[in-house]
Length: 370
Image 1 (cartoon, helix red, strand yellow):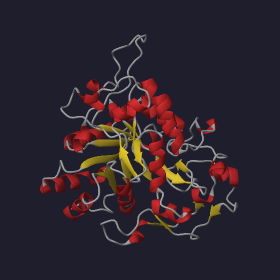
Image 2 (cartoon, rainbow, N blue to C red):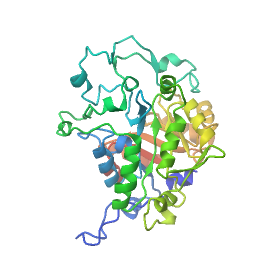
Image 3 (tube, rainbow, N blue to C red):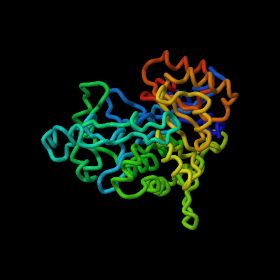
Image 4 (tube, rainbow, N blue to C red):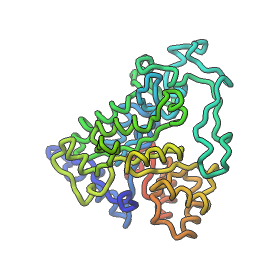
C-alpha cells in the first residue's frame, strides 16, 4: 500500500481562458521535478491555518485550492449523534461559546467534574491509561445538540486577533464537508480530493451515545461516494480516487496518477478504534503516535504493523523512527505520515533528507506544495 501513498497526484487544472493557462504551479510535475520522489499533502484541519478558523468552510476551501491531496476532518459528536468537525470535544478554544453561554452556564463542566481519556490503555506503550487522562474544564460537544452548536461562531485559535472571527463561520457537519468537496471543490478544481478523517475520543463518544461511532462515520462516507457498502456483509469497500471521480461526475481522471490511490484513509490515536474500523472496511488505517509517549522502538513498530497500514508521527520522533526502521529494514513496510508542518520552511528540508516519509500533514498547503 505504500506505493499508493507515494503515487503522484494531479492538482487544479487552470481554465483555458486564464492568461496563465498551462503554468499552474499546483500541477504535480511542478511539485516533483526537483526530486525523484513525491509525497502526499494532507490538509491538517483543512490545511490553511493562521488567521483562518480551523475546520471551517474557508480553511477546507483554501487548503484544497492550494494543493491538498487529502483534507483532514477531525470528527466529534453532538448529544444527538451528529458528526461535527472539531479537533477537541471542548468548544472553548476555537468558538465564542463563552461569550454566548457564559462561564456560569449549566453547559459548562467545571475542573475536576469529569475525567476523560484521549486514549485507552490498549496502546502498546506503557499500558498505563493515566498518561492519556484529561480533567480540563470547558464546554463539551456531548452536552450540546447540533442545533445548539449552530448558535456559535468559529474563531481562529492560532493568529489573533483574526479579521475572520467576525464572519460568523459555523461548525461544519462531516456531511457538509463531503458535500462541499463533491459538488464544488472537486468539480471546480477538476481533480478528486480524498479525505483522511480522524475520530476524536471515539471511546468517550461511544459511551455518551450508547453505540459504536465508527460505523456512523463509514455510513456517511459511503453516502458521499467514498466507500461502497455491501448490506449482505455489512462491509464498506474503499474506492480509488478515480472511482470516486467517476461517481461524482468528473469527466476525466488520470489513472496513472489517481487509479491506485484510496479515496479514504482513516487515522486515529486510538488502537481499539482502528481495530473496530478493520472489522467493517478495507480502507487504509493509520495509527497516530506521539513521541515520546510512544518510544518508536522495534517493539512498538512491530505492534503497529499488526493492525495498521501506516504510522503517523510528530516531527520530534522522526529521527528515532528513522533509526528503528533502518535497523528493521522496514522502511517500505509502513506508510509514514509526519505532522504537523506550517510556515517553517527549514522543517521541510529535514523531511526531504529522510527520504522515506510518504505524507505530510500541514497547516499551510501552499508552502508545503511549493
